[in-house]
Length: 92
Image (cartoon, rainbow, N blue to C red):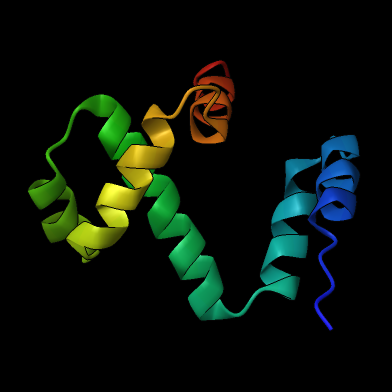
């Protein structure tokens, strides 16, 4: 049986105003590899937004071109959640 509660987690995290609490939660709930994977995907989204080539991103972050292409497709979708989160980050 699959249980998906991302909506609960998202709503709860959105209600917390202290970034350190959220970071501590993420480090507690995720493995070290999962934290690395999420962090590297976040970096790739920022690089793509800056116009860095996919090959350069692959070299810099040690990611496969397949992952980078997927990230690029997500970033360029209409109403992209990647883009919305990236835009929110830029406003910080």
